[in-house]
Image (cartoon, rainbow, N blue to C red; front, side, top):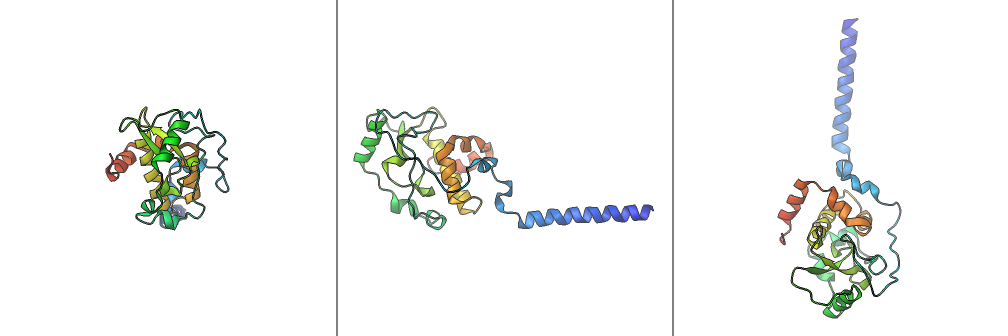
Amino acid sequence: MKQRISIGIVIILFLLLAAMFLFLAYAPSGATANPVFASVYPGPLRLPERSKTDGCTARNGLPDPRCTPGAVFPDATKETVCTKGYTKTVRDVSVKLKKQVYAEYSLSYPQAPGAYEADHFIPLELGGNNDIANLFPEAARPTPGFREKDLVENYLNDVVCDGRISLVTAQKLISTNWVAVYDSLSREEIQKLKREFSRW
């Protein structure tokens, strides 16, 4: 009887170990992904139309959604945004456009160095485009500000290029609430991103 129980225990342990091995071997790299990934809405990216052109107000690191709802290149894919040097080939924001963006947010251009950045709400490295609907003057302070958003952009580009999430999911995350993504990162992840990002 004891021998049967012992054999049964061995079989159970073997099955558990086998299941663990299969999980580690075949689970997608996102199996231990950031839980904020699960917060995105299903289906395609849905960005509202730009409906306001003055009196815009940024709050808590996020642009006015009526002035800066975000916009993307329709032909951007994972392959294009993950190509080294891609953003240099598509970046095209003139000083005239920057002045218009700042004016819509009741700011003069330029501001003191390091105080603001003419930011792509959905970054170029995630398929965002240069349309005014995707631009806003982002402050450095209070934090998280544009420097922290740069870390989020790099983080999301990394997980897209690693295949952990789709490009559309990353676009949804950053255009819904990039601050939530930043807050979800561990101290170790933030320090790693800072080391990789030359501006820090």
